[in-house]
Amino acid sequence: MSCGIHYLASVFMAVTPNFVCGFPGNVSSVLLHNSSASSIEDIWTLWTSTENYIVVQLENGEIWELDQCSRSKREVSLDLTYEYNGNKSVFPCSDGFLYDDTKWKSTVVTQWDLVCDREWLAKLIQPMFMLGVLIGAVIFGDIADRLGRQRVIWFTSTGQFVFGIAVAFTFDYYSFVIVRFLLAMVSSGYLVVAFVYVTEFVGIKARTWASMHVHAFFAMGIMVVALVGFLVRTWWVYQIFLSIATLPFVLCCWMLPETPFWLLSEERYEDAQKVIDKMARWNKVSTPCKVSELCSVQQDDLASVRTGDDDTSSTKKHSILDLFCNWQIARRTITVWLIWFTGSLGYYVFSLSSVNLGGNEYLNLFLIGAVELPCYIIACVAMDKLGRRNTLIPFLILSALICVLIMFIPQDFNILIILANMAGKFSIGVAFGLIYLYTAELYPTIVRSLAVGSGSMMCRVGSVVAPFCVYLRSVWIFMPLNRIIPAYTVLIPCEQNTSLPHSLILLHNLFIYAAKKLLVGIMALLSGILTIMLPETLGKPLTNTLVEATEMGRNKKSCSEKTPPAHSGAALEKIEMFGQERVSTDK
Image (tube, rainbow, N blue to C red; front, side, top):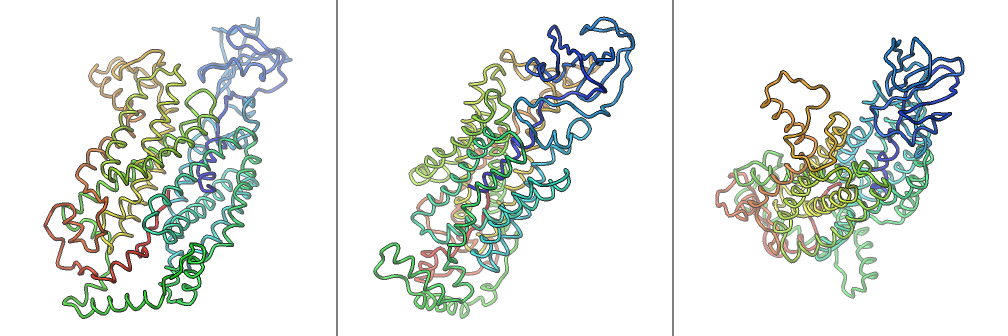
């Protein structure tokens, strides 16, 4: 929940309100079209487009036309009228900017004037945060394997609270971005280790539901962001309240024991037995697992492997190239990576763009988070009843169709647009939550962590790209959708060049239209089609070698002679029973 809070905090923190250039002096009257007022604050309710400009008359008689990124002084000051055809002197916005504070009293944009030629700095806030998430997942995932899950959860939860509060007290834009970057790193590490912690403590029968619970509480964190954003309209106070909301999780983390699997990997058998005995008491198990029995089974299994025909294969270190050892596995890897990327891209595109859908932006974000809760329940039920592949395919294709539908909904139909975006978030949420477990089941034990880790990296790439997809909205200007307009009628953005051939204009418009509206849809459709070629894993045992994984795909071609033999007998069942495979994933 605390990670969901910080991941989406910038949705309201970095809002760009309506603004115009400042002016030198005191205003006596203001004019916008045919409406007049005595102050700028009274005119914001009439502001409908960024193409508008405001005419102000100062107390010394000067008349200025104020645009968003420039201002002009009328040379001949006669009557105060909106239209003027005389000479003007253009000046830069050297007196700062005037912002509409009817919704937000202060944002980081208004704090440091991140508009006009500095607008790109505002657009880097969320991508830089996601870059920190990417780096943090790699760093803290490795540290957790070395120092233990408990210590990393302590450190990252405490760091999340400290850096969250520190963000509110940054003194300039660059310190703000740096502290937010550190916050992203510890938040990502917190989420990675929390997911591993859950999977290592929960048995196989409930692992699907437990992993979905992690996603569900992340969605609840998004709902908290919407609630706090509605109640608090000053960005640094808003940030403090969000950080205080994570304090209970910091206190709870100190109560958590270390996972028995990490203790076993470090040969701390007595500590592992204590944790197992405590688990047995809580679950009222009369005959708990004995660590000595588990260790003896593992040692016997390792001895049998060492005395096998291939002594070196058991110690072989695998690399990412093993995910492309033959065409069957390579095709599977490309498809899985594409699903990870598409799921993350769609998840954050729908979440970040929810505040731009019209209507109440706080309610929109709250609903976007709330719609995830039933989607994970449906995903769990469908995964157990229909299978992983048969659940993934229809929801990917459905999200693609919804993206196409959203393009043709007129902008005036706010309710339809919101409902369509919620449906899109629902469908992509099912796919995004499902791919975690599906990836772990598609690959053998020897490369399972590597496969899920590489998929997680593609996931982070999608989350970095997502904010730029949302920002395309402000770069290209389209014809107002006051009616259903097919793609070929969209005007060329910005400047019209009538000298171009009609075919080039058409191709140009279709490309830009697809880039803005169809990117997620195209990726989802492509992923859904490729998923048809993936094997179903429901009810099938986990594979242990690349040969077995290839055979699961109905291709008898083996990978290479370097593939180690499978662990067999009671040892394999014992290891799988207690979840030896530890999946390090992050949202």
